Image 1 (cartoon, rainbow, N blue to C red):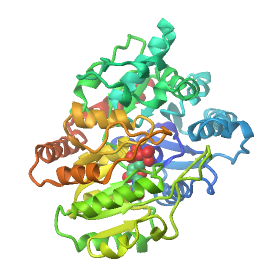
Image 2: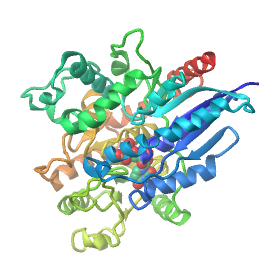
Image 3: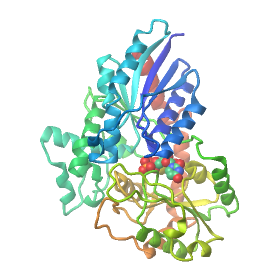
Image 4: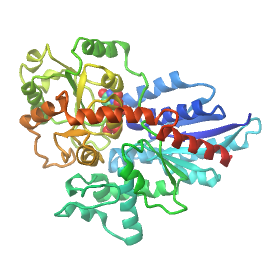
Length: 481
Ligand code: UDP
């Protein structure tokens, strides 16, 4: 049997990498002809220790004959890389790997002893600069898009306004009224438009390039499922030569990379809590709150009286551009006086948790979330309703989609922005109200999330929508060969 080889180029961050490896495993399980090599470019461990641990664990636990990892050589950052944003730094690091990726593909293509044929390159939504490398060899490229279909639609729409109609899309954020865009049933308030589309430097140097890159691919695999976003999935206005849109999710982060002790401490604590009684709080792999806001959240939790599991992480130092949150040495330094003693019987404050395992635990009844797309999919998968508290990127748009478009979440805030220097605090009362609503045991939102949990699981099974999309992708990949 001639093997069909795929090369994957993921984005080396938590919300992208594990999911792309999971996609690789799905493809391999669906067709034994596939062999996949994942090209890994690591950030320095001093910047992002968590993703580095994830990479170590992936390489150790997932490597098989069909799935291989190739670590690209470390590169030396130039001062310019650190000049704009964390994403820009990673973009530059990845771009600097182009010659190595080219060499890797060249070797594969000229290896006469190999019985496999290179049938595609699968790049992350932010690794689209690698499409040019694949094009040089005439190899089809596919993009793995780790946010919603609605966000992809909006980004492509903005790119077309900019490139075809020379429109300054940043102007949308000054609108006095809500705006209608394809992919959304409701008009969008300007305050929830993703900063990455309306902030000029972020748009021009990152997301405009990402949108242009996506258009060059043969297909865009979105980590979503049609039943969740039918309106957005149907709204793509693409021409014959445009990439095919394939909803293939939810593809979740299932890798185990946390020490057994930490994991069992958290899971044993959850085991001791009644079903549906705990609210889980996390702002993802990149989010954190300033001290004043931490105190309001602590007060809101205490006022609500609910049990809670809180991932509390230290914000990066001010004025750091390539910024990642880190762990606190002592939570007492930032929490209100006496808080940890008062809540000792009902709450647990931790750093990093195995999120999918936490959300799957019967004790967890609600989730205060920054609405990162992976956290959104994981909560839907587990049937746990969200209370929305976005921080950055496209998270405000996700919150709007979850609360207004889909009615799958409760609002704490839709337009909080950690990037806005004048951002007002979310007060304890507002947090308490959100917690009470999301923890209601028989609310419409909870019923709907349970319904979508079933739909999400069905979509991945034989005959399900995402299962079918992946099947159609596989036959195209193999047919191309
Ligand atoms: N995550 C985790 N433990 C944590 C926080 C986050 O395992 O304590 C995982 C989470 O399960 C998800 C990813 O990190 O898969 C975060 O992705 P998301 O898109 O939600 O947000 P981002 O971190 O990209 O902002």
